Image (cartoon, rainbow, N blue to C red; front, side, top):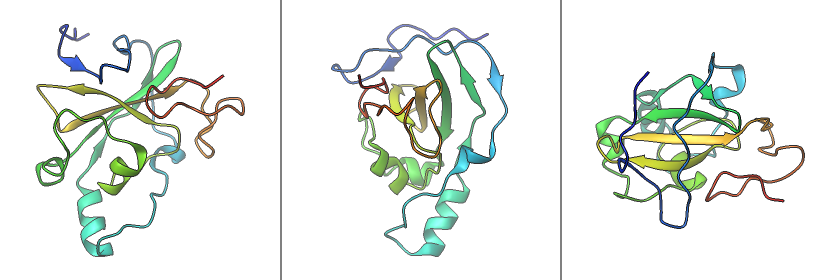
Length: 143
């Protein structure tokens, strides 16, 4: 098991840090790569860019499911440094996943790796947890 050094994971100051993901590894499910919104650039360029993106298996702890997405260099150059991405921004880069995922952390040594989480029990089609929405800035269930 790898330890994550303190200070390497920097979320925006208004967003609390999550504990390092621990627990089970889960195999990808058919909903892991949901359809993204229609691309704004040419379909051919969009598909070529999206095809280079690598997705991890999901892993979990008691509260969240996690996954990381590795962007190729030519895509990572488009990402603003030190900024957590909103859903429409990461989908605009070609990242394709089911609903409910939130970009919650930036790992400074590897900014081309996007770290995502969503609450355990999130419906991958609706992005809701027991009918409740997820806060897009923290990834926590809204009460």
